[in-house]
Image 1 (cartoon, rainbow, N blue to C red):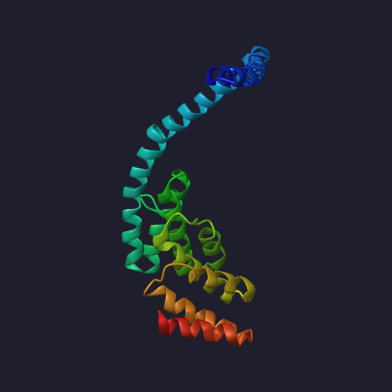
Image 2: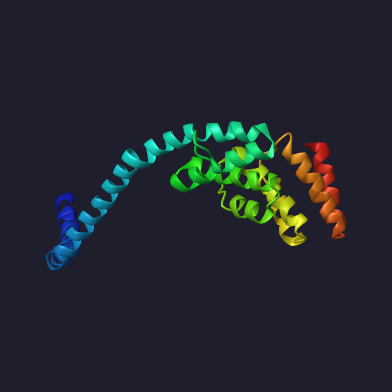
Length: 212
Protein backbone atom coordinates (compact mmCIF):
# COMPACT_ATOMS: atom_id res chain seq x y z
CA UNK A 1 0.00 0.00 0.00
CA UNK A 2 1.37 3.40 -0.98
CA UNK A 3 1.71 6.32 1.47
CA UNK A 4 -1.18 8.03 -0.29
CA UNK A 5 -3.40 5.00 0.20
CA UNK A 6 -2.41 4.76 3.90
CA UNK A 7 -3.31 8.39 4.49
CA UNK A 8 -6.62 7.88 2.72
CA UNK A 9 -7.38 4.82 4.86
CA UNK A 10 -6.50 6.72 8.04
CA UNK A 11 -8.81 9.59 7.09
CA UNK A 12 -11.64 7.16 6.38
CA UNK A 13 -11.23 5.53 9.82
CA UNK A 14 -11.15 8.85 11.75
CA UNK A 15 -13.64 10.98 9.86
CA UNK A 16 -16.83 9.14 10.92
CA UNK A 17 -15.94 9.56 14.62
CA UNK A 18 -15.22 13.24 14.14
CA UNK A 19 -18.42 13.70 12.19
CA UNK A 20 -20.36 11.93 14.91
CA UNK A 21 -18.85 14.13 17.62
CA UNK A 22 -19.49 17.33 15.65
CA UNK A 23 -23.03 16.24 14.87
CA UNK A 24 -23.75 15.53 18.54
CA UNK A 25 -22.26 18.88 19.54
CA UNK A 26 -24.36 20.76 16.99
CA UNK A 27 -27.47 18.86 18.03
CA UNK A 28 -26.86 19.60 21.72
CA UNK A 29 -26.16 23.29 21.06
CA UNK A 30 -29.23 23.61 18.81
CA UNK A 31 -31.44 21.98 21.43
CA UNK A 32 -30.06 23.85 24.44
CA UNK A 33 -28.74 27.06 22.88
CA UNK A 34 -30.89 29.29 25.08
CA UNK A 35 -29.58 27.60 28.22
CA UNK A 36 -25.96 27.76 27.00
CA UNK A 37 -26.27 31.45 26.13
CA UNK A 38 -27.97 32.07 29.47
CA UNK A 39 -25.14 30.41 31.39
CA UNK A 40 -22.48 32.33 29.46
CA UNK A 41 -24.27 35.65 29.99
CA UNK A 42 -24.76 34.80 33.67
CA UNK A 43 -21.04 34.12 34.12
CA UNK A 44 -20.14 37.37 32.37
CA UNK A 45 -22.56 39.31 34.58
CA UNK A 46 -21.06 37.78 37.74
CA UNK A 47 -17.50 38.55 36.61
CA UNK A 48 -18.45 42.12 35.71
CA UNK A 49 -20.22 42.59 39.04
CA UNK A 50 -17.21 41.27 40.98
CA UNK A 51 -14.81 43.55 39.11
CA UNK A 52 -17.07 46.55 39.69
CA UNK A 53 -17.50 45.65 43.36
CA UNK A 54 -13.76 45.40 43.84
CA UNK A 55 -13.03 48.64 41.97
CA UNK A 56 -15.83 50.88 43.21
CA UNK A 57 -16.49 49.50 46.71
CA UNK A 58 -13.85 47.21 48.16
CA UNK A 59 -10.69 49.05 47.10
CA UNK A 60 -11.78 52.58 48.14
CA UNK A 61 -13.32 51.29 51.37
CA UNK A 62 -10.19 49.31 52.18
CA UNK A 63 -8.06 52.42 51.73
CA UNK A 64 -10.44 54.50 53.83
CA UNK A 65 -10.62 51.92 56.63
CA UNK A 66 -6.83 51.50 56.75
CA UNK A 67 -6.49 55.22 57.46
CA UNK A 68 -9.38 55.34 59.94
CA UNK A 69 -7.97 52.60 62.17
CA UNK A 70 -4.78 54.55 62.92
CA UNK A 71 -6.47 56.89 65.42
CA UNK A 72 -8.04 54.20 67.62
CA UNK A 73 -4.77 52.24 67.57
CA UNK A 74 -2.95 55.34 68.85
CA UNK A 75 -5.57 55.70 71.59
CA UNK A 76 -5.33 52.02 72.48
CA UNK A 77 -1.57 52.29 72.88
CA UNK A 78 -2.02 54.93 75.62
CA UNK A 79 -3.12 52.02 77.76
CA UNK A 80 -5.38 53.47 80.46
CA UNK A 81 -9.00 52.30 80.72
CA UNK A 82 -10.50 55.58 79.51
CA UNK A 83 -8.32 55.62 76.39
CA UNK A 84 -9.00 51.96 75.69
CA UNK A 85 -12.75 52.56 75.92
CA UNK A 86 -12.51 55.45 73.46
CA UNK A 87 -10.41 53.30 71.11
CA UNK A 88 -13.11 50.65 71.29
CA UNK A 89 -16.21 52.82 70.91
CA UNK A 90 -14.79 55.97 69.29
CA UNK A 91 -15.72 59.56 70.06
CA UNK A 92 -16.65 62.76 68.22
CA UNK A 93 -13.28 62.85 66.48
CA UNK A 94 -12.94 59.31 65.13
CA UNK A 95 -14.62 55.91 64.84
CA UNK A 96 -13.62 53.16 67.23
CA UNK A 97 -12.71 49.56 66.46
CA UNK A 98 -16.32 48.37 66.81
CA UNK A 99 -17.59 50.85 64.23
CA UNK A 100 -14.78 50.13 61.78
CA UNK A 101 -15.28 46.37 62.07
CA UNK A 102 -18.99 46.77 61.35
CA UNK A 103 -18.94 49.45 58.64
CA UNK A 104 -16.07 47.94 56.66
CA UNK A 105 -16.75 44.29 57.39
CA UNK A 106 -15.49 43.01 54.02
CA UNK A 107 -12.07 44.61 54.33
CA UNK A 108 -8.84 43.33 55.83
CA UNK A 109 -8.84 46.33 58.17
CA UNK A 110 -12.16 45.21 59.66
CA UNK A 111 -10.48 41.91 60.48
CA UNK A 112 -7.71 43.80 62.30
CA UNK A 113 -10.34 45.93 64.06
CA UNK A 114 -11.93 42.76 65.46
CA UNK A 115 -8.57 41.77 66.91
CA UNK A 116 -8.03 45.13 68.60
CA UNK A 117 -11.64 45.21 69.80
CA UNK A 118 -10.97 41.88 71.52
CA UNK A 119 -7.84 43.29 73.16
CA UNK A 120 -9.80 46.34 74.33
CA UNK A 121 -12.44 44.18 75.99
CA UNK A 122 -9.69 42.12 77.59
CA UNK A 123 -8.08 45.27 79.03
CA UNK A 124 -11.52 46.27 80.31
CA UNK A 125 -11.75 42.85 81.97
CA UNK A 126 -14.66 41.61 79.86
CA UNK A 127 -13.33 38.21 78.82
CA UNK A 128 -16.53 36.97 77.22
CA UNK A 129 -16.72 39.91 74.80
CA UNK A 130 -12.97 39.74 74.26
CA UNK A 131 -13.30 36.12 73.21
CA UNK A 132 -16.22 36.94 70.92
CA UNK A 133 -14.20 39.44 68.89
CA UNK A 134 -10.90 37.57 68.96
CA UNK A 135 -12.64 34.51 67.53
CA UNK A 136 -13.91 36.67 64.66
CA UNK A 137 -10.32 37.39 63.69
CA UNK A 138 -9.48 35.40 60.56
CA UNK A 139 -6.13 34.23 59.26
CA UNK A 140 -5.70 37.15 56.85
CA UNK A 141 -3.20 39.05 58.92
CA UNK A 142 0.06 37.21 59.63
CA UNK A 143 1.27 40.05 61.84
CA UNK A 144 -1.38 39.52 64.53
CA UNK A 145 -2.53 35.95 63.91
CA UNK A 146 -0.21 34.03 66.24
CA UNK A 147 -0.48 36.65 68.98
CA UNK A 148 -4.26 36.39 68.73
CA UNK A 149 -4.14 32.61 69.12
CA UNK A 150 -2.00 33.00 72.25
CA UNK A 151 -4.40 35.53 73.78
CA UNK A 152 -7.37 33.25 73.08
CA UNK A 153 -5.43 30.45 74.77
CA UNK A 154 -4.91 32.69 77.81
CA UNK A 155 -8.62 33.46 78.05
CA UNK A 156 -9.68 29.82 77.78
CA UNK A 157 -7.08 28.93 80.41
CA UNK A 158 -8.49 31.60 82.73
CA UNK A 159 -12.00 30.27 82.08
CA UNK A 160 -10.85 26.77 83.02
CA UNK A 161 -11.25 25.24 79.55
CA UNK A 162 -7.93 23.40 79.32
CA UNK A 163 -8.76 21.54 76.11
CA UNK A 164 -9.46 24.72 74.13
CA UNK A 165 -6.57 26.55 75.78
CA UNK A 166 -4.18 23.83 74.58
CA UNK A 167 -5.67 24.00 71.10
CA UNK A 168 -5.02 27.73 70.77
CA UNK A 169 -1.58 27.66 72.38
CA UNK A 170 -0.62 24.95 69.90
CA UNK A 171 -1.96 27.11 67.08
CA UNK A 172 0.05 30.06 68.40
CA UNK A 173 3.35 28.19 67.96
CA UNK A 174 2.41 26.40 64.72
CA UNK A 175 3.98 28.80 62.25
CA UNK A 176 6.73 31.33 61.83
CA UNK A 177 8.57 32.09 65.04
CA UNK A 178 7.91 35.42 66.68
CA UNK A 179 10.83 36.49 68.90
CA UNK A 180 8.41 37.65 71.59
CA UNK A 181 5.20 35.61 71.43
CA UNK A 182 6.56 32.21 70.39
CA UNK A 183 8.78 31.61 73.48
CA UNK A 184 6.02 32.81 75.82
CA UNK A 185 3.43 30.60 74.14
CA UNK A 186 5.79 27.61 74.20
CA UNK A 187 6.42 28.14 77.91
CA UNK A 188 2.68 28.35 78.67
CA UNK A 189 2.10 25.31 76.49
CA UNK A 190 4.77 23.40 78.40
CA UNK A 191 3.17 24.34 81.72
CA UNK A 192 -0.24 23.18 80.53
CA UNK A 193 1.19 19.88 79.31
CA UNK A 194 2.71 19.42 82.76
CA UNK A 195 -0.65 20.06 84.40
CA UNK A 196 -2.15 17.46 82.11
CA UNK A 197 0.77 15.10 82.86
CA UNK A 198 1.79 15.01 79.21
CA UNK A 199 5.46 15.00 80.11
CA UNK A 200 6.95 14.27 76.69
CA UNK A 201 5.05 17.12 75.05
CA UNK A 202 6.07 19.43 77.90
CA UNK A 203 9.74 18.58 77.34
CA UNK A 204 9.33 19.15 73.59
CA UNK A 205 7.89 22.62 74.22
CA UNK A 206 10.70 23.62 76.60
CA UNK A 207 13.34 22.17 74.28
CA UNK A 208 11.97 24.14 71.36
CA UNK A 209 12.36 27.38 73.36
CA UNK A 210 16.10 26.68 73.64
CA UNK A 211 16.41 25.77 69.96
CA UNK A 212 14.41 28.71 68.67
